[in-house]
Image 1: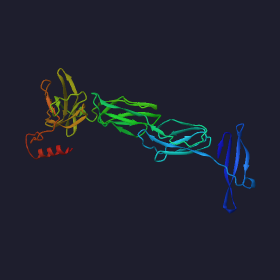
Image 2: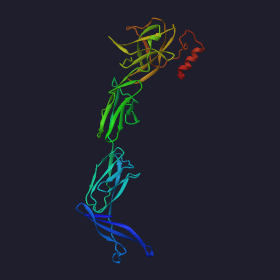
Image 3: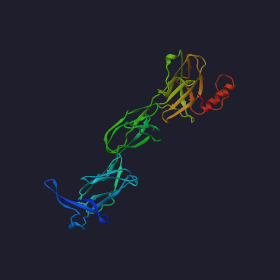
Image 4: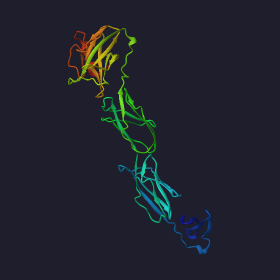
Length: 363
């Protein structure tokens, strides 16, 4: 078929004549009053029509479609309007499509959530091939940071997209960057065990332009460490401070000191301000005398959980250890070798077992 202004020539196979010579017929239509009317029929049965040829001219439009880093995009559809048809890119991002002589219209790449530049290409009365009709594809991005209440980065926060199961992790600086589909609708949420985040989510409608500073503030909630005081008859109070292995006092707002007996939480405390600093006023609970309590500490500023805090304490009813002026000092550094590992006043095989438990983190 060939189109020229208001005329169309349509060719078709007709028959095979003697000597296996293929023949064809042609039909010429002309557009009048918005209707295509047959003007002529050319058949090979008419001797005067033999040995004639009709040329159907086509021209090629081709190019590559790649992302902004130069990687080819496969399966992108390029649509040619005005009855021009369509084609798809191959594994190299290459496409090639033929249009008929004098075709006029636009070509537009679409699909897979990308934004394409240029958005469209316009052609008028095509009478030549067009090469290097390339497009660059991109997706808008969402980016931001996750910080704690002390403005410290939170690593490995999961950023969830509500429209699918995809999730992305923040890096060591608390940063995340997510490419989303052009015209995307949805929400993003920050999720990390033990934290609540503000805002709860960010929501987007018809998202087309990249957006930064989508920041979340995480507050560590002691959801893993809790104690039901109604289960216990006796209580005690430990007034304390916590130091790191360099002797620095740890007392950020989100820090948590917790007491345990055999991994059962027996009390938690956050630092409370006093006239010359902060103290942990740790209320502990038990039903038995002489239970050995161990301690754990969460360093919110550095996002570190210390499973073994020195030193252990034997519980007694109405226990009072430390005060504001002379607090109990807990240390988060590793313990030195102490023969009486369970603090029972004796050195025996039980101490060796306790050391093995400590080394293997056996529960």
